[in-house]
Length: 79
Image (tube, rainbow, N blue to C red; front, side, top):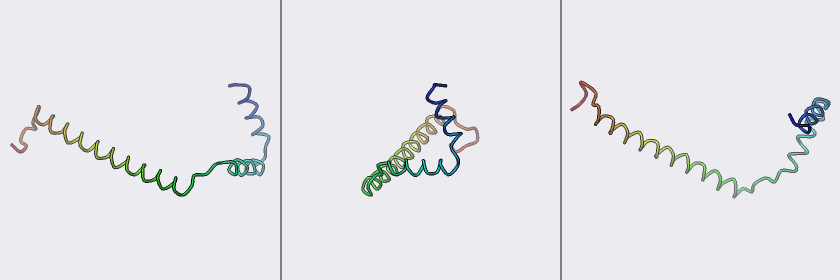
């Protein structure tokens, strides 16, 4: 553990609960929050990626299922 980490841990242990929450609030005020447009574009991108990866995974599952059934058909299955 580095010296700065150990110092930070001792300092955090010395702070009371109220001081901790005051520190959290102070840090949250320093955060640069995204604009509404940035939130919307990030959400749309996330949804598009989830759908795209889902479709890609489904397509690979179908392809590998077809290939494996062609190589080793299940006995008693449809012919």
